[in-house]
Length: 362
Ligand SMILES: [Zn+2]
Image 1 (cartoon, protein in one colour):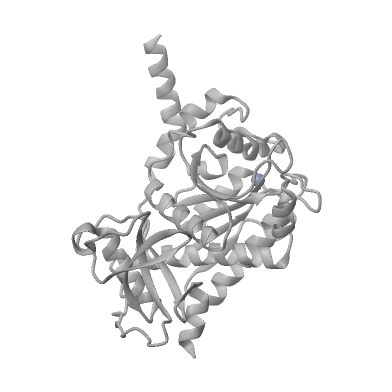
Image 2 (cartoon, helix red, strand yellow):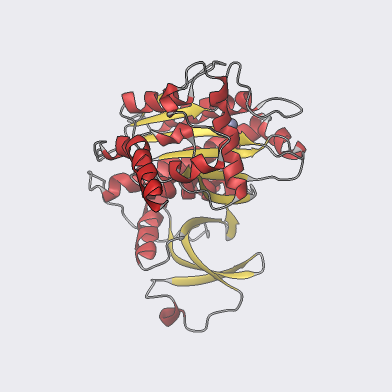
C-alpha cells in the first residue's frame, strides 16, 4: 500500500513538480507584470444581481494596468485579456511564461452558496488548502476548465476531486515566499481601505500552477453579497481596489529591487514636519501601555505610541517621505516585527498614505 502511494507520488512529482524545478531564476528588476482578469466570454464566473464576475474582474484589471503604466513606466503591462473573451486557464499561465513575466496577478470575485453569507477580500497563493473553504474557492475557480475544449494541459486533473488537490497543491514552493510577500501587501492595502480582511490563503489553482514567477490570485469580494457587489460594481469601488493592488505591487517591486541591490538613490531623512503630517512605522499593538519601550521592543528606534480603536499602537520614527519610512520599516522588520507597516498622520490624525503625500507636497 505504501509502495503504491510512493509510486503515485512519483508520477505526480513528474507531472506537477518537475516543470517548476526546471525554471530559470528571475532577474533583479520587476520589469513585466501579467494582469489576468479571471473568466471571460462564455465563462461568466460567479453571478451577482447587478453584474457578473468576468465584468468586474476586467474592470479592475484594466484600471490596475493603467495605474502601473502611468506611474511605473519601467514596467511592461501584459493583459491575458482586455476584452470579454474566453481564455483557457493554461493559456493564461503560458502568456506569463512566454513573456518572462516577473509577477502574475489573477483577479477574481468570490461567491457563496447562500447570498449575503460572507464578505471581504482575500488573496491566494499556490499551496495546500488548510480548510474546506479554501478548497471550495479553488474548486470553483478551476471549474472553468470544464468549459475548455481541450484539457490535455491539465493531465486529466479533475477539478471536483478533493484527492486530486492534495498532491496538486505540493507544487507550491519555488516562488512561494515572494508570492506570500506580495499577497500580504495586497491584503494590507485592502484592509487600509476598510475592506473586511480575510487574509492571505493557500489553495491549488490551475491558473497559478505553471506560472514561473511570483503569482497571486485575488478575490476582490463576494459578488453575491449585496453591499459588496454594489461596491465592486461602482466606479469608486473599482478604483479603490485597483489602487490598492497598484500600491501593493509598487511596494513589492521597490522592496524586491532594493534587496537585489540594483541602483537605488540614497534616501535622505528629513526632520518631521511641524504640522504633524508625517509617515511612521507601526510595528506592535498592545491592550495595555508598555512601561519601558526601550527594553520591550528589541531595540526599535524612536518608539512612540498612540491610541487607536481602543488599543495602544507602537510606532517608530517620523518621516516626511514615504521612502524614508520604508527604510525604517525594513529595519523594524529585521528586528523581528515582520508585520510592521507604514501609517500616515495628517495634522496629527491618522490618515491615508495618499492624504499625507498630498499634504506634504503643498
Ligand atoms: Zn473567478
